[in-house]
Image: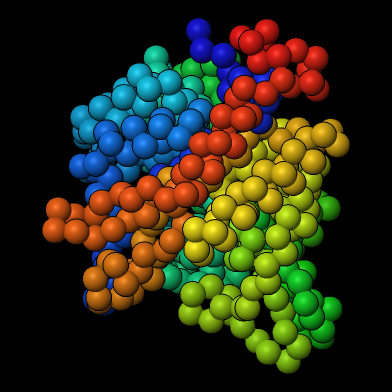
Length: 434
């Protein structure tokens, strides 16, 4: 029997892994192109060599998403052929899969998307089908990647389906995502029993600057609490004393729904935190109003490792679970990426030495991705490439090639050093722990 993810991490040194960007927003429309990152990056056809790249730099685990819209093309119909091959090869290579079940988009046939009345049942049905299919290969799941980004982009900003807006839209999406999240986790737990391990993952959101200015105080206070809203709902933390209870009730939440969520908490075995030093900290400027998001973004501030430390400590304290850095990088030059790799690993080493249970480090992504602005654009995908990866995406006559950079060499060296290190905190070497 495979050891649980929690034990696998806590019994050794810091584990190093990677992610492959798997945003799926398959619904198009006038002036809107579907987003399928696997299609844009040609991962659907290059998956085998992509997995070899991950293995070649020493990745011990891989955060990788199932494309729900492809494996479930019609209600009740499943097509697992491609995912069978990818997951099987991942395990053959000795890479531990952490499966993203929901990385934004829903199938095209689900009218209303996350706002559909039967969304929680549909997403749980899909999740349990996946867990049953791969019960001999996969035990570790992220039910929803970045649930609060779902709430913002689909509920508050109206960028992605179902295009809801404002606080009312945010509340409707938060409740729907939370109910689906709980149903997913409980369904998989019933299927896999104590072999199942759940890595909850959310985007860290920090707000600084003129947050106490009269024109910003109410919004900034709401956003600080809202950053944790879905995880609070899922883990049964929204009660009479929750600072956003009045907002929830004002915008359509009923006490029975909140009580039901509180009675059926789904706790993380590991709390994953996504932190991007150049994007995770938004700045409120005095007298300047920004809605937030792509259409009207607030400026951001790079708080580096200080911001990283703050969010890891806060998530560990709030949810009383080991934490993992589940996404990080800087979009920049090779030198800038290497500098952040070394600085962020050193900060996590410092936090671990001080007693914080940080169990994993994830560079995101393995290779570059295409920015979500592609959806609203009309030019070639190359106009939207983000230089984030260990490997750069290079357009050629044969498609999108992967070109190794010095970031890959740096990551491999750090991962190897960790894997071969003596972990003095447990008073045994890695060889002894095996």
